[in-house]
Length: 396
Ligand code: SDX
Image (cartoon, rainbow, N blue to C red; front, side):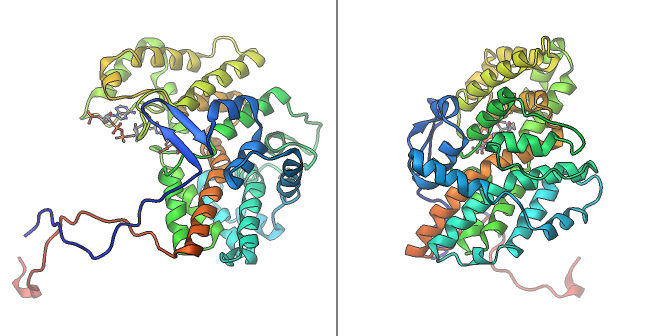
């Protein structure tokens, strides 16, 4: 027979974890990296501050920051043979498919990474991953368009270096706009970590088997790709384009409420936040700053987004369910204004989330050294219990 089976599998669930990295209060809309408020880190800090903080548990002193910057900057190149890997993808491969492949392939180029028991090797894997993600991401974009690869310039800061690799041309001068680089840096800080979300849990689960850390990050990229998770920023822009004008917002809201309709308000709702995602508030400000700096006056998609936010956050259906804009609601509009193509939005999210993934992987790996415990979440078995085998001739 079938039905809920409350058998005792003889082990306690090892799917959840304890962590000191990120704290979220979904009711109050609070997000802390190692105790520091995300708004302060994004508005007052820089990329290196937050990346160091997540990895090392403290904000860096000036000396620590200089050493950290050196480590991150001096390893931005990837093995030339890895660059040939990109040529093996179909010409129209989605950059997230490419990233899942090439980041996994890094495990074949960094032999030290497999020595997870060695603290120095663990740290090296974390630093190299942070260094190389922008390079790998920019190559994925450039090769998917048949553009020449732009090598990393180590005289630039992290965000500027990424914009340069994405948009420079070998045939002409390209100066990174510092206002846009700062906007991108804030976006990178906002997306770095978010405690045990789907992709981070995937990285921890893969890491608990003591797999190669680069292969674990590749599994996180695969999980992040989904439109219910990191793929939402791309899905928000497609949704705003589909809505097309403010007067079609009521129709969109009606569809979002209709349980028979699979349509959901992309960029709205969250597993944890039942109020405004604090990142969305900062992102909305960055959005206005960038559009103003670029003198983009009446951006149709921003107008629709603002009106959609205004109407939905006053609509009882969404308010009662705690459905408010999340980090992805405005990020797509900013990224589009920065010139980032739609299929690269989630790649950019992956570049940023790598800082959280490696910090969480490192914390898990250190815990594993103390008490090795593979991740093994419990299940609620609702299938058949034991029943007699049926020979083919007796099946009908
Ligand atoms: C990210 O986990 C993380 O931290 C993720 C992330 C990170 O930094 O790693 O924050 C990044 O993934 C942000 C979320 C991006 N995804 C989207 O914006 C896609 C649209 N959002 C939905 O798919 C949805 O809100 C989820 C997947 C994010 C959460 O879904 P849940 O857990 O089902 O939401 P819920 O339990 O709060 O839903 C409550 C109700 C349900 O209806 P009822 O059964 O109560 O009638 O709200 C409904 C849901 O059906 N609902 C929505 C909705 N989201 C939930 N209705 C319409 N539109 C939506 N977007």
